Length: 87
Image (cartoon, rainbow, N blue to C red; front, top):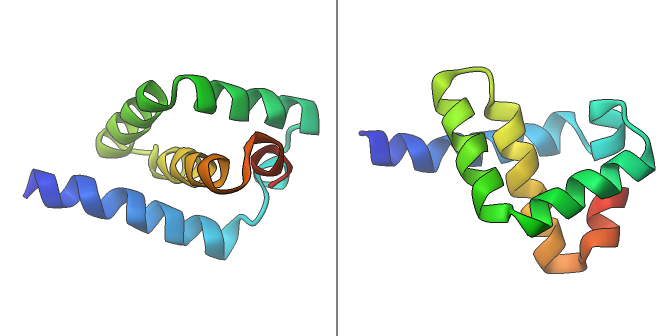
């Protein structure tokens, strides 16, 4: 059960992000410079960021954070850090 939950939570978070939050800067209300720093942190310590995001999602209230981290990691891999920060 826990294994399925850990697989479903990030997927639900990612779907929620695409529906309700198209841009990182608009969603979090931060500047583009701060968005670049967030992307750099996620890119550098991506495994740690993913673990923290998943733990907070399981504990409660961190589902959006888990979705943001997963989406940002996907964008970094696909398009690069500059595009992910602009997202």
